[in-house]
Length: 471
Ligand code: FAD
Ligand code: SF4
Image (cartoon, rainbow, N blue to C red):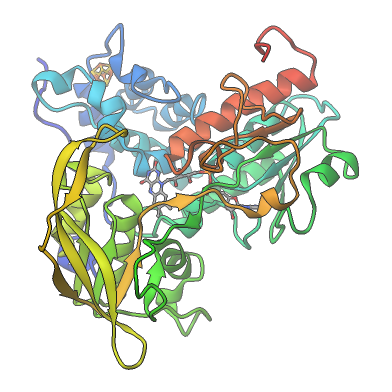
C-alpha cells in the first residue's frame, strides 16, 4: 500500500539547547528510519524526482539500494553524478528541486530524498567505506583550478579521474569556499568538507593554499610559464554589497560575509582560544531574507544575542531562504520584521550603532524577477533599537582575479560570460563556472557547472570533438 503521509522526521537538537551551541542541528536518520523511508518510494518507471535534480542523480536507484540495506552502494550510486552527497544532502533546496517533483507529493508527502542522500553518504564516511577510485592512465595534461569551492572541487575531482594533473589554487588558508567560510558548522560540519578534500588529495589533486591568483600569479603566467594546458576559474561571488544609506560607517555594522567568515573560518566563537574576535551583539538585526541572512541571524543567537531579528523588505512568502532554515530559525527564537526597509542607521556618542530608522513597505506589481515589488509607504518611518547590524543583501563577483585577466568577457553585473555547453570563456582554454558565472546561486548549480567544464576540458585537450558544440 502506498504510504502517502508517513514521511520520516529527522531527529534534532531541541531548539532551546541548539540555539546556544554550534553543533549540527539534525542528527540524521537511523538505519531503520532510512529503510522505512526508502520503502515509501514507488520506484517510478519515469521518475519525475530525477528531472528536478540539477545533476540528474539516479534517485530511485539509490533509494532501492537503501531499501536493500546496501547503504555504501547507495552512496556510490549517487556519486556517479554528484561528487558531494553529504554536503548536498544537507544544504540543497530539495523542497524546490527533486522532492517538489516526487509523485507522492501530489496527494501526500514526498519521499525525503535529501534525508536519504545524507544518510547513505554519512554511513559510507563514518564506516570508513569510502573508496578512492583509481584514476585513468596519465594524459600528460595539466590543469589549474582557481578556487576550491564546490565548483572547483568538482572540476578537480572529475579531471584527476580522467588522468590529468590538477592543481587547485585557493586564496584562503582552508579549502572549501563557502562550504567552509560561509555555511555555519550547525548546518554543515566542517569535518564533512575536510573529508571530501582529503579524498581528492588521495586521488592525486594538488592543493596550493594561500595562493591568490591575480596577485601572486596571473592566469596568463599559469598558462605560458607554468605549463598549464587549461585553467578553470571558480572564484565565487563573495564581494559584499551594502545598502548605501546614511550611517553605514558606524561601528558594529558588519557585512554577512565578514561576520560569517570570522565566526566559521576563523572560529571566532572560540575566541580567545582562536585569535580572531567578533563583536557579540545583544540586540542584533540582520538585513535580508536569504540563506546567508538566516545563517547570520542564527549565528548571532549562538554568539549570545538576547534578541536576533530579520528585517526584510518583502513578505514572508517571498523569503528566499530555504523553508527549513526559516522554520529552524523561528523555533530558535529568531524574530521577523517583514515589509520593512532600513533608511538610516542611528549612532551613539561613541560612534557605535544604536538603532536604525526603517520605513514600512507594501507589495506592488511583480518586478523583472517575477516577485512583487516592495514599495515604501509614505510617512510610515519608525525606529528599531539594536547594538549590531549585519547586512546580507547580496554579493558581487570576487574582483581580484580580474586585475590581470585579459580577454575574458564579463556581463553587466561583472560575472564571466561562458559558452553554455562547455563553460569555456571568451579566452581559449580558460573555463569558468559556479557563482562567478551565475551570481550567488546554489551548491549543486556550482557543481553542475564544474562537471560540464571538466568534460569540455577533457574533450578539448584530448582532441575529442564530437561532444563539444562549436561556438
Ligand atoms: P565559492 O564557494 O564562493 O568558492 C570560491 C573560492 O574561490 C573561495 O574559496 C575563494 O576563497 C576562492 N577565490 C576567490 N578569489 C580567488 C583568487 N583570486 N585566487 C584563488 N582563489 C580565489 N547554496 C545552497 O545550495 N544551499 C544553501 O543552503 C546555501 N547556503 C549558503 C549560505 C551562505 C552563508 C552563503 C554565502 C552561500 C550559500 N549558498 C547555499 C550558496 C552556495 O554556497 C554557493 O552558490 C556556492 O558555494 C558557489 O560555489 P563556487 O565554487 O562557485 O564558489
Ligand atoms: Fe520515488 Fe518519488 Fe522518485 Fe517516484 S518520484 S521514484 S516515488 S522519489
